[in-house]
View 1: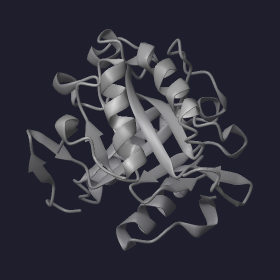
View 2: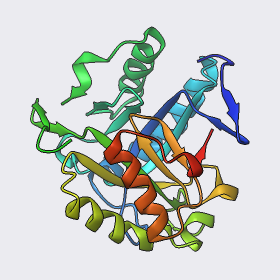
View 3: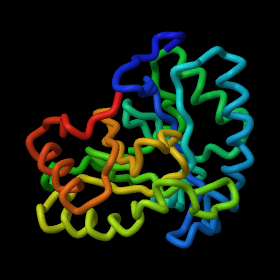
Length: 112
Length: 112
């Protein structure tokens, strides 16, 4: 992931794409379960951890409701298609990033 | 993709995850380029096409800004990590879904 971004047609496609549910509704209002549990507050921590770890090929995107509200806050790691629940603390974010660096899944948080 | 959803730990993880940029800002206000170009209006068409085509293992999620605004509206297909630009019409959505059904990329719309 480090400095290996592919450049083609003017776009650096990320090697990893992390989605963080921010519970956006169609109107845009962030008001669902993940948002209430603080997912958006963890976005800042996630971004700073990625920078600290030198993970430059990773893009983070906040999303509308991912429809797994009872397991939230939800983070998804693509293209691995790994869905994580209960990402409600800096420690939980660290578990996901530790696994990402190892090319592993954070088993304890994995859904589906 | 048809009726082959995996069930584990109480969650049906989608086989394909389509992201549609809705330009949500941190505040939740959808006001960026993709939104202005009508990406949200195409969400309804996309959802109905998936139903018509019987693609049950596909989840669609609206996202915050994907930072490729000048190529928008943007659609991403995961876990394929295919990023598409200029998805501004029902015909463009059809191109993406036709390719998805064939297990291909919609080459003309591909970014990166």
